[in-house]
Length: 183
Image 1 (cartoon, rainbow, N blue to C red):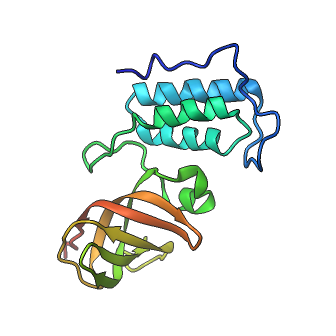
Image 2 (tube, rainbow, N blue to C red; image 1 turned 135 degrees about the vertical axis):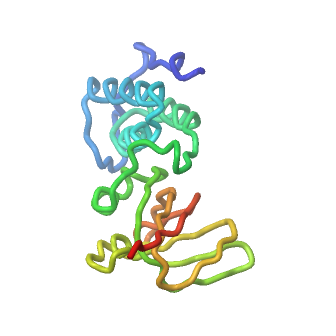
């Protein structure tokens, strides 16, 4: 409820006159189309795709007015679980354009390395794609705000939210489950 009522006013500009270092240069029609697509994704419960399009607007030459409306749409995004996540982003897609996928949700498999347990959180490196010890796609730091019995070398599947830092991408873990090898 509420998403359908968020509209762009025809009287307000869709493009900034003096954009500050936009990643994406869009036309007014493209901004309006992406905004409409974002609303459609939210109404279709495809929140992850909506996040990507909201980020596209925020990283573009869209006007401050449109960006504020996009942020308002982002407030409707719900945190998924393993049973409700739709359209999780693959590692390579996030790695190639991290800012476009910021705050998006992923489900990545891999092995755990360098487990560090603190008072507030558990941190480890996820060796993405290495759950079967064949191909290492990348190493991503993961933070968990909940307790879990983890050890180095365990194969897991992590549901996480993409965090972009100076050092690259990381995940804020939402949920995880262990992968067991059937012999």
